[in-house]
Structure formats: structure tokens, C-alpha cells
Image (cartoon, rainbow, N blue to C red; front, side, top):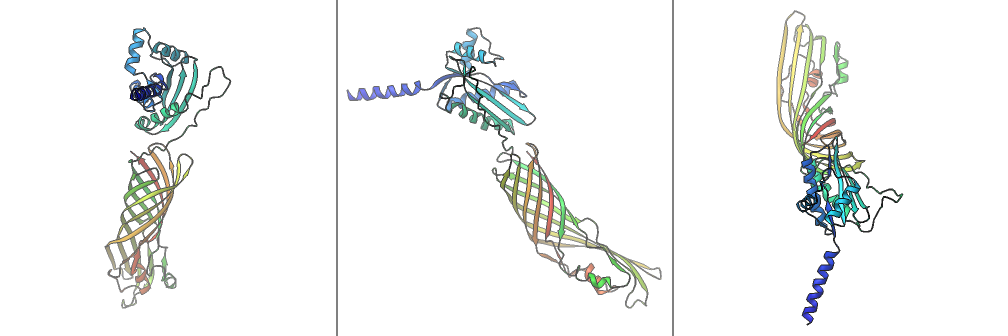
Length: 405
């Protein structure tokens, strides 16, 4: 006897639980800017997500169409409140879900209404805006609006007769760069390198030499490519290659210098020296400050290697009309480099981002003491043209254009 009572109680609880679920039907979303097939696919996913909330018993699309066909009712283009109520009465459900899905430029917008069939009242609304791919609307936005409709759906009735503003969720611009996404970046900018050795220390001595002039050491430009892999909303990995080279060759000159052991012949000489630093690196970026919906400030760390290629061209003439030319290029093995960067990034669209980055690069010095030198010129000039060490340390300012795919 007790066992029968327990079994009956359990059965009644189950029936009561199912009785708490509301019978609803979902109209296909009205498409704008997307194809009807895509809208129908999203509508089917919405039905599934609404059922998964456990709040609703959802009429299957096939069963809904079969009943409407038997009644001779065409639901194509049914978007008004009156039409949704009429279909709900034919299907004998408590509530109907109607809405639209549209696209303007790269923004998708979905708007839903939960309608009480008996009273003709709107009991709940849900609106979401999303910047990104349509696949993310399927996997992220549809489940979110289903939860919005199921949350407190029985306690928030809003009738058409009420002179009351509907509370619509504030549009939200989602970050369009999804996890697992790749980005290809072009980096261009300027670099200031601090040369180690005698380039700057002998400048004053050389200025005292008769007939000598020298421009300052040329600044450098930077260009490179970087591949990024977005791990999460804040973290991304990166790997890249780049090249730093002289904007203009460094050119000192001598005019009317009496070279030793030259029979007191005056010499005129022009010299060109260029530097090309090539680097390969890996690292990561971390977005530590979100500004608004599209802007972030980030920091990053790179580790890698830098190699140097440098050349010297000498052209000098003697007063007797003879001339000589010296042209040679030197290559140096890679040295370890560490770079710390911070930057500001602005997301132009779902595909493009623009960043400005300031970085400090720390690297060892290349030993250039083995370069061939001449004895024809003053020692100070030799030390300037052929410094004992050349450093790749310095400050970089880059502009970065990223394409996400």
C-alpha cells in the first residue's frame, strides 16, 4: 500500500513538473540582409535552445506546418502580432515566439518577442547586436536570446494597451576576433639604435680636422610581417620576421687631407656605410585595458635572434688624378634579442585592426673588430667608419595593420 502511494506521488510530481512548462511555437525569423535558408536554419536552432532551457514545450516545425496546412493557413511572411496570435490559436499553444534577424554592414541584429496567445500581450523581448561571423550568431547569440526569453517569462507581461516603454537590452558590440582566430600583420616604423664603439666619441676630434665634414649617423626604418593566433579575449601568441635598415647611408667626407707617406699629396674621399639588421622572433601579447567597444591597450614580449649585414664603400682621389675604390660587405652571426612592447589597438571592422606600438629592444653587440681597415686616413676616421662594436639595441615605433581570418 505504501509503495503504491509513493509511486502515485512520484507520478503526480512528474505530471506537475511538465505542467509547469509552457506550450509554445516559434515562427521562422524574418530575414533582412541574409538568405531565407540561413534564417530558417537559425530558427531551428532557436527552437532547440528554447527547449533546452526546460521552461518551454516547443512544437516541432514539421508538426506546426502540418497543422497549419490542414487548416489552410499560410504562415509565410507572418510577422505582425495579430498574425502570430492567430497561428497560436490554431496550434492550441499558450505562447508564440516571433522576430527578425538582419545584417547591416558587418553587424547582425536579432530581435524576438514572446507573445501570450490568450491576451495578445508581449510578455518578453530579447534583442542582441553582434559584430562578427554568422556562425558565431548560431553558436553564441541564439543560445543567449533563448535564455533571455526563458528568464522570468511568466512575471513580466507587457500589453499593447499599457503606455509603458519596453525595456530593451542595450546593444552590445561583441569582440569580433574569436578564439582560435589567426591574424596577419604588417609592421612599418622607425628605429633609433645606439651604436657601441667610436662612432660618436670621435666626432669632436674629427671636426677639428681640416676639410672634414660628417652628417650624423642615419636613423633606420623597420618593416616586417607578424602572424598572430588569438587564444582568448586577452591573450594571443605571435611569430614574426623583420628587417631594420638605414634610411640613408651614413656618409663622412674628407677634402684636402695630407695622407701620411703619400708624398704630401692631398686626398679627397667620400665614404658610405650602411647597416641591415634581420630578426626572427616569437612572443605573446596581453590586452590589459579595454577602452570602449573597439579599443584596447596591450603589452607584449618578443624573444628571438638578430643578424647583421653591413657594407662600406670608399671612393677617394689624389691630386695627381689617380683614384681608388673600396667596396666590401660584411655579415655577422645572429645574437639573442629581447623586446618589450606596449601599444594601442583599434578595431576598424571584424576583419581589420590598426595599432600603434612603442617597443624597447635589448640585444648584444656585434664584434666588428675583424673588418679590414686602411692606413691612408686619420685614425679617428678609421675608428668611425670601422667601429669595434655595433649594437642592435634601441627604441622602435611601429604602425601595425592586422587582417583577421
